[in-house]
Length: 215
Image 1: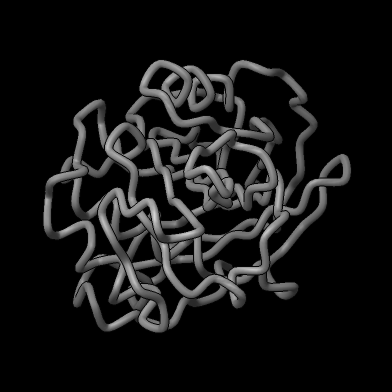
Image 2: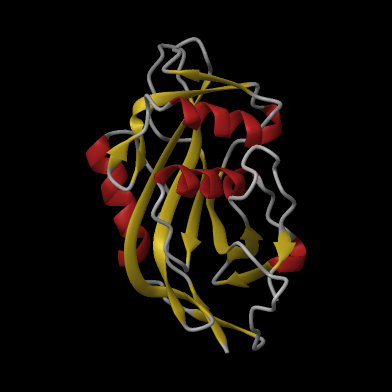
């Protein structure tokens, strides 16, 4: 029987130290109520990664966002800064094609930050497997003076239950999961927090494959 437990932060700020601390806090805060899913097994036609997502805070309607700027100290995958990697922008454009993306553009009114960590924790399980990768993605508004306080953001916690070693593939999964809506058919509620289970593939990055319901 699949078990799913709750744990996650509400906010992520934009210094390297704080980003790492908040991502780790996603599994350290407690709040471990569990949810049970019907027994299931992966069939021969199923592929990709099971991804669990939860909106910790959602203050911005992403449909209203026209441009997004990546900040230098807010683009970490497996403790490596990917800010200068051109593939990050390419994946963002493919996953969110109607937006304009920049690197550290102070004229853009919204910024995006992400932190992806590889670590095992039993706070959240799927079919008895603990998550092994946690991701924190958020879009925040920029203040008129160009600063970012990390408030008024749209934040989503994302969890994987299988190892993924390539940082770009991990980012691609996280970006797809961040922009996908919480689907009511695959959403459960625990202590007032909605969790969605989806299955995503890294094959054909840029084609934005449709997600499928997880059995």
